[in-house]
Length: 537
Image 1 (cartoon, helix red, strand yellow):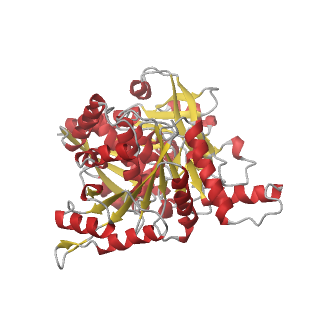
Image 2 (spheres, one colour):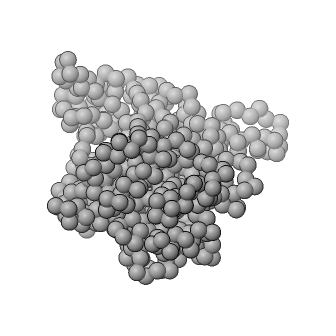
Image 3 (cartoon, one colour):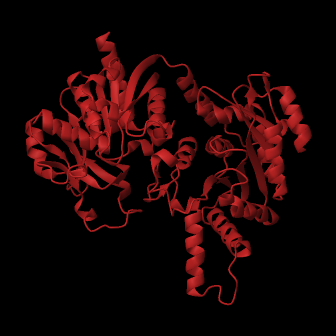
């Protein structure tokens, strides 16, 4: 059976949640037993997301195969529970690079190379090859940005042409605002956005409406009337307690049955056991038994999407431990003033996530010391592990001038230094230690082993700097555990405190966490924070 396609388009504005809608569609198809994967198109001319500032684009998500992709891939993975590959990420930079390389090679000899048909043909060919090579029933395509953006116009044209060859279902995500002045939902913007899509030769099969309150019947009727979509195809996507309720909410409206029917698939394959398990886990998020307070001390906290995988991993771990995790976002630069450490009072745990650059580093170190000396659970991720080592070297081992050469090149005590493999690297994109790497846990009495319950694990990485093994003996003599190394024994992968719960990992375990399989180290962290909180009561 040839693959079918679903295309998710956003109108009016970006940031409405196309990633959540796409992920919900993937989850629904999975519940029906169909093989489905996503493709994400982003119009920027960067080759990938690796060199992009988190403040502008949100988190850089890393796949097992070392690809640095859009943060929406994290959302897809968290709903679908499947690993993905870099070819599912299509950017303007990749497409234009490929077309120009083909032209220089002479593949188009004698032709005027143009957006149509050369670029659109290339896009369609890529999508067909992905669907075929991965043996998919359905390929779900999310088009980044909003309809009307010049950056995605050629890709949308390719989607129109794709529908001439294959079965394609179009889903339009739009916005229905509620004006406080009049107190009613206004549908005119959504109508105009829909007409913009129709002007491009595409007739959406569904309109998904982002709203703050549930979509009213009057608004639904008006949208149906002015867009030629029947009422049952106007889908409410109002605010909910958790994003993991979205596929359930869509199914309550009959979206799943209509979607499967439109794709000409068998609608009698719903796996009710799998559906009930998803409902059970969502219930753990909505109505937990316990509660803890956790501070995330980071450099990019003004844009929460910079740490979305950390945030979601805490939610997954909370569901696994029947615990609501209340997150307090703390800008690390503020904590360079030690008086501001009062922001951490009342916290049961502290997390320092990954990041690059010198800004706010001393504030992170101060927060780590606060957690260690005040018996708060601590989890350090990548940079958070490196600074955990620096803090311990300074304050427990009394090594004056301990630092990372990323911040002080001629540091007196180079606790963290540039990986030898990185010394000759000049290009910034795709050159870090990236992707999934295995490591060996050598201490069965460690908190790390208790979390993972096995000797060999693999987690995803994204870093250039590493613990300096010259200092292994001195930190160990002063009570720091070093329970895990790379398979060749050369690089430190985990460190932990002997007194109290404190784990630092050079990896990014948040990049593999899902609701069904939460990251083990996050589960241990949340459980430890809960136990420490109960001890202090």
